[in-house]
Length: 88
Image 1 (cartoon, rainbow, N blue to C red):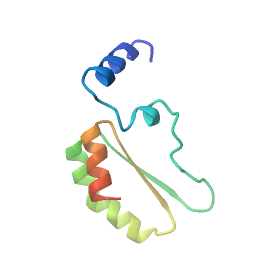
Image 2 (cartoon, rainbow, N blue to C red):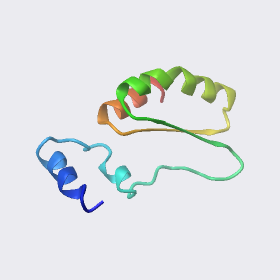
Image 3 (cartoon, one colour):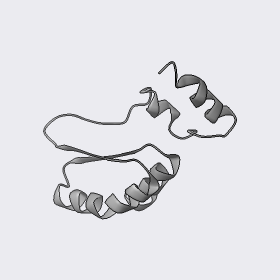
């Protein structure tokens, strides 16, 4: 984490990256995951392309397990935005 921190700060301040996901990346934002009787289904997609590829799967899982919590994560900002646009 210490080795990656300077690059993350540079990307955040100079390139305006991670503006929407920095707190979640650092584990400081509550993701509203409620553990209990309902299943938690987590899909991790690295890029926007992978997010598009799993969109149909995510919708099918939401339909099949309506009581479950579906969590989508992505490494890239564009992947995160795509997930919010197509899946949420």
